Structures are given as C-alpha cells and as structure tokens.
Length: 321
Image (tube, rainbow, N blue to C red; front, side, top):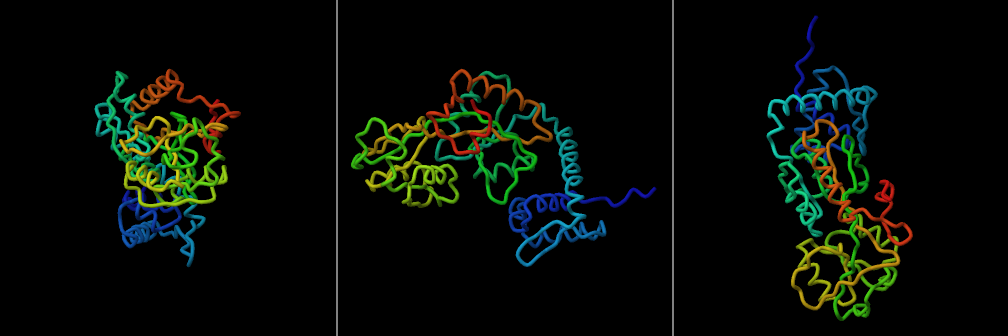
C-alpha cells in the first residue's frame, strides 16, 4: 500500500489557522509570515492533496465542503505533532510558562502570589501583548498558561482553549482633585455620566471600559496612546472633567493632584481569568490552577453578589456565585 504524501506540517498549520480565522491577513500575522507566503503554503497543500480548501471571494474567505471536512483532522494532526515534540523535550523538567496581558492594570501583582508561593511547581512568568496574542502563543505551544481579561472578540473563536475566572477585583474611579465629585467618599457609576471617561487606547479595543460606558450612560470619552499608568493619571490630573477606572488594588505611582474613590451601587468588578490550551497541557498545569483556586478562596477573590456588583455579561455566565 502506498503510504501517501509526506505532509509538510507548516502547510497543514497554515491551513488550520486560516480555517480558524477565515482571514488570510490575520492568519499570516498569527503565523509570523507574509500573506504571500501563507497563500503559497496553502496552494502547495491543495496541490499535494488534489483538492480546493477555500473559496476565495472578493470580500470574504470561506471553507469549501472539503475544507470543512479536513479542518478537524488537520487540528488533530497538529495536536499529535505537538505531543510528539513535547515528549522529545521532556516537559516534566521545563518550567510552566505563564504569559500575562492587561499591563496597565498590573496583572503581575496577582500572579506573584502564586509564583512566590511554595506550590511545588516552577513557573516562568512572561509578558504578552494582548488577549489574541497570548491565545495564539498558547495554540502554537509557545506558552502554557495565560492570565488577563478574557472577553469576546468579533470574528475570533478561541477554539482549543479553556478559561477559568481567577479574580474579581472591585474598580475605583480616579479623579483630579479639582473634579466636582472628587470630595465624595463613594460614588455610584451613574454619577459619572456627565464626565469624560479617559481611555488609554481606542475604546473599541477596551472591552471593559466600553461596556462600562454603555451600561452607565457615559456619553463622552477621550482616548490616547497607552504610555503607561503614570501618563494616564497625569492626563486625568490635568483634565478635571475627566476620570478613568482602575482595579482597586493597582499600586498608583506618586502623582499628586488625583484621588481614587470607591464605586458602589453597583460596584463594578474587573475579571481576571486564566487561559490555557486544552490539548497537550503542561504536566504541572493542574497544580498551578489548583494553587490559584486555593489562594483565591483564602483571599475571597471570587466573591460576587449580583444585587450589589456589576460584571459584563461574559463573566456573569462563568458560574460565579
């Protein structure tokens, strides 16, 4: 019996990623290659197999019936290849790689509780750019666990990944001392409706702030480049009609002229989640997840009262109670 063609896994991976994203440009970015190189890999795979995998329309890309039928086997083939490589590398001896995102809100201060604890596992913290970047690194096997805010992204399905809430953190409002509301001991989110919400990036990229503005009637927003927490605080200080939101435990740089005020009625909660690859997990992943759960239970990180707290809908569906 003829064994069939020797498949180039790079071509199979090009097909699998494009089948997931249905966008050649984004798939090329995930793979770290040019769109031209991606198209060549897929064309060569189609030639090897003697099939057409994609309908390449003028404005959209879709899978052919054959492409649909091969997407699952391609994913399983890549998973098996990953397991083969992992076995060769003896992952038992390698530290678990944990990448964080959402750097403006200092995610490492939460991760540090676990990394510094004597949990019997070696964790190697690192930085990712954002949720899609860490998700792609997980799927490629470049990292083992992610920590940050998990939320829906239009046009993106995080197939092959699992996530779990790790911490729900009350959110404060940060105001210049000259803001009319700055003297309050506590504020309702709706009290901010006449102020301008400062966003350290385009609002379309900031899921939590966008949903906060929609829920509490914040009609006016302003945004700029994310140049770090101190820059955002200085902007609020210099614009007394502005405010910004920060998780309550974020350590503030020494910028005079601003004040953090708790929010209640309801209290917004910022959700930090863990994200990991379902196939071929690191051997000590369960131990690290258990360490997060145990530490979170002791510190009451997942307390949520729907009568007094507000969560964007995706977190509320995660079974917090």
